[in-house]
Image 1 (cartoon, one colour):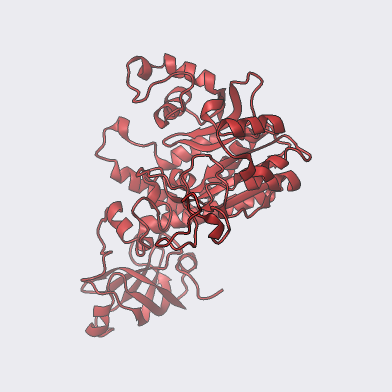
Image 2 (cartoon, rainbow, N blue to C red):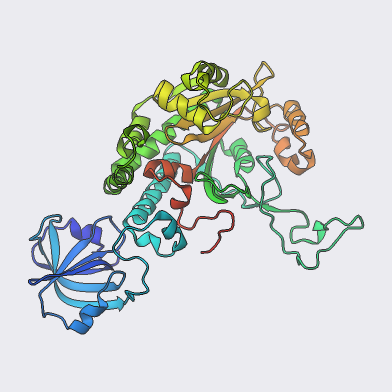
Length: 478
């Protein structure tokens, strides 16, 4: 549909046929014998070269053909004379759709820092790096939907506005229509939310999981894939205030089934990217190597394609949290006090501990299970020992935890006890508790932060660079 894109034109055999190319100028170069214009329309990492003869166009027109300008070029597709491309366009006519003032356009053909590009997020998709990331992001999102569709799951849309806190962390964005300069008060002086739009406190969702479980209790296998929001004041390379979550929930799945699904899912989705995003992944691999060339060898990242194949080709190592703690206590970094955070049974593992297990000890992705109940969420199924829960975390190289999940508590009394224990008012999740009263069933699920996956697949160091318009503390510009 529509005009041919540059990706298609580059794959066409040159027979001097008429072509129309539309896109943005990356570079313009003039020599004695020719004028070369590199055009890109975002369909591929590769530019198409368009060539004109000196004197073919007025100096006035050529002055408007600058980096960032948008052009329509008509000409013939011919075999390229130069190296680097198989075909090029011999120009007959140029139409400038939109000029770009050289003095004002911030994306000139030179190296720009990622920090600078975050300040111009409206233009950064025009760079090679960000167009590659966004194409890979699309491919991964498509692969997610394809995977679940092919495996008999139903896509469930869970609410973005909710009155429950699935994680119990309390770091939520409030949704209100109350006049903040004239808040209604109760007799006790508290804010009267009965006057608010929903007649109660409401927030942006931190997870679709609880509602997802309700779907699984009727449809057997569902998944959600939607935006989630955390109001934690985290200025890190791994946290966003708005991000996308993939959360499958499955009736009749126990912990083992949950682990099998998580492993198969990430392998298939990464394989899809490896097969369908070769050019973009090669570009990002070379970009990373260039960026790290001055680092000592032992501090450099694993080459990107090697890292992705490492995950796809290796069976994931599975062990309990207790076994992992034993390994960490016997490890060299622990004995030599190299770990920044202490190790001991009951700790919430930090990223350095997770990465040690994956990168140094097992040299493969790891799934940890059966964590202490105190460090995990209220909805996880209690093990027979009463001390641990049927949790599972999938750990990847370079990133640590990428998936967190569990078998869910299906026993009404045990779940209610846990809800009270962590201080949640049972009235706020009465509907969730009721599914344990009416035809309860063993069920499991997990959550994968989509941006963490995109970050892993693209090799980008900062999560703010894998979503088009990142939201983080003091930043909601675009």
